[in-house]
Image 1 (cartoon, rainbow, N blue to C red):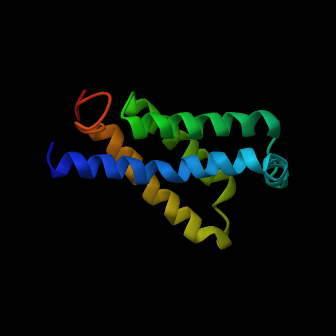
Image 2 (image 1 turned 60 degrees about the horizontal axis):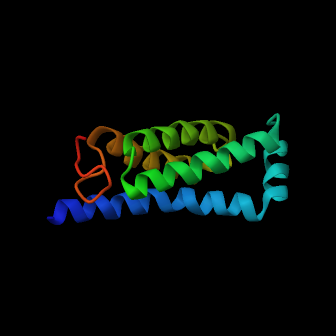
Length: 126
């Protein structure tokens, strides 16, 4: 175990925590989340909200554990692009848009390089 492995683990944790927090927020304020989604013109909000919770939670857990990391990061990246497109493209959403672009960069790095050695996959290019 070297510094790069520790940094890869910490990076996975930091990149994932926002998705876990978001999933938890959706669960604990489900009705409010549905109202927010409806206000943005989304259809089938209950189904899409449950799907968002599942993608965020399972993707984040996958990335944190370093198990199927590339798949988890890819799922989160697709979700992030879709959520950004729907919720964060308005003129008053610049900071959220830029934040999501930065997170997308971290996810793309995980897809390209893998989880590192401190993971259930046990290697960066596994």
